[in-house]
Amino acid sequence: MKQGRRTLLGLALLGGMSRLVNGAPAGDGALDRELAAIAADPDCTLASLSVLAIRAGKVVYERQFGQRFLGAASSLAPARPADQHTLYRIASISKMMTTLGVMMLVEQGKLSLDADAGAYLGFPLRNPNFPQRVVTLRTLLNHTSSLRDDAGYSWPADTALSTILVPGASRHGKGEMWASNAGPGAYFTYCNLNWGVIGTVMERVTGERFDRLMKRLLLDPMGLHGGFNVSELSPQDLANLATLYRKRTVDTEVWDAAGPWIAQVDDYSARPPPAPAGIGSYVVGTNATPFSPTGGLRISAHDMGQVMLMLMNGGRHQGRQMLAPASIERMFAREWTYDGSNGDTSGGLFQCWGLGNQQFPDPQLVEGAAFKGVGHLGEAYGLMSVFVFDPVMKNGMVALVGGSSSDPAARKGRYSSMARFEERILTALYRRALGRNTAG
Image 1 (cartoon, rainbow, N blue to C red):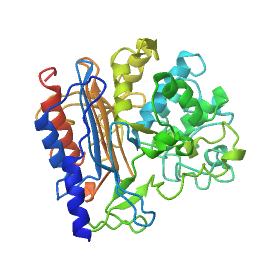
Image 2: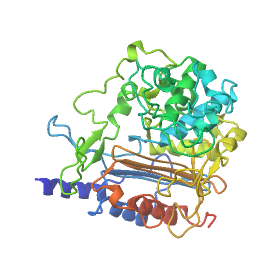
Image 3: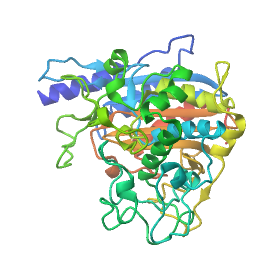
């Protein structure tokens, strides 16, 4: 039975390719076959894969492989293929999307990148080990705030962040959320908690709940599907939401590549998603972490491509100016570069950073090519995601993987800190879809 299911999945991965619509190019059969082979690789099979490539400012390739939902015997729900409109929980690329909202509020004069973030929050935001140093939105956005994830980065809606972050408060404990080795602005450490604080700041200055604020600022004006609160997705979007899988148990985290696919998150085949606990009595501006500004956006690769085009086109989308060119330039300007001692690179993954975006010196992204991109990566619950583009050449790539059969950490890349299948996907897209319009 298990072997039959694996065979059917392999056939689906090879044959489940959605053709482009809306006048986009028909595509490249060789690239179709190469990506299908990567997705169906028995050494590390992918549950689903959705990709998009932009060359010279135009979408030239868009494909989906595999199943957004693998079926459930318990509810008799059938398998459903990934398509152009399939939404994924894109993990940490959400941080970059949240940053777009921040920059809009900066443009509106509601936020300043270099003001004391505590002034917006209504409580002091200071590292008790370096109390004279100010934590600003800039240091939160470039991961030099001196906040750490050691005490967690998400709490129920009825838990105010002030009770966690302020020394002496009821949930502050031993202060593990604050670094002792370096103060704000001095040392890079990737930190999810930064974005919970940022989302709460955004709520404070607007009076709007974070998930709805991001719909108003970014998603709705651009006509994008999805959102940061899965319980408020439209029925259409919920029906096209990808379940994320691993061949790994949820609790014990044991991988078994020969075993069954196990849903990790976003399986709503039996019942609809519940609203975040306590949301009915939530006080806006006290704790945005239930909406996961750090990783909770559901969106399709197609719509991520629309965001990428907007960034390439100086903030303009279908005749509407979403962000001023100066704001985009400010967001993607280099804020931090590793000098050998000024940060934690997480095994070489992090080398350069802007405001809410990672910057990739070659050859970090593409094998044997000098593709210098900016953007973000993501990984959570089996998903692996990539959003990278060259703003000068207007070339870019989006890749969303809905889960893998083998541990990505055991399938390391040859030339980067990414998983090998991510390297293969990006290199295939670059060589076959981006073609000669490259800087390298």
